[in-house]
Length: 218
Ligand code: DX5
Ligand code: ZN
Image (cartoon, rainbow, N blue to C red; front, top):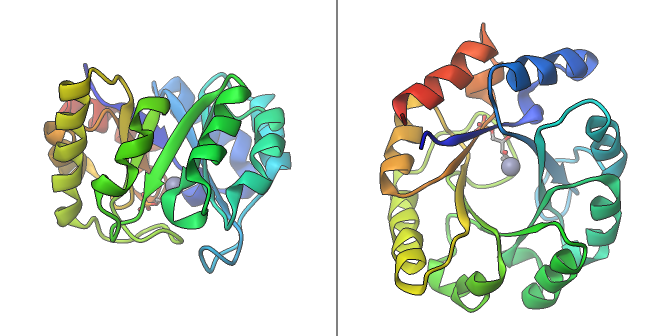
């Protein structure tokens, strides 16, 4: 099965967001990736639950919400109520990872654990049984348009092996620096979802970019 594509609105045109979202939905993107940044866990500040609620009303894509927020457990309820379908929390952002994931699961939505490039897969092994998706950051979080870190591919392979060995069925998502080449690398290692911001939205023809990511992983 071709990789699922999750365009990141971080690189979209905010004043034409509805059209930018529709373009990728019509092109066959399954997820819409929403990067929530608090100015603490990462330097940037982006958007809050109001954006998720507004987008929910305009698209049928799966809303894939990536919380780059200190102590994300403070905001799980707000984002779940706003309409997140998948809610991701960083291992590095909370002292209570298990509790934060439990809190997400209690809302009946999909839970995701996220690891930064400097965090090993072994750190999240104890929670793999309870998540629907693992996000392997393929750049350091906080900004779009960075270069894919090839050393993260090994972690995708490790996660794929753990899935196999334990019968887990979580998705493995990559985020950062995805283009047709890096997505293919990640897909071959076991990734099932690719977030793509600047590759999809920066230049011409976002629909063709979505199609290209599908094509190289078909
Ligand atoms: C980075 C964000 C990404 C970002 C990816 O902190 O988590 O989702 O939008 O952007 P690109 O695809 O341009 O690297
Ligand atoms: Zn992201």
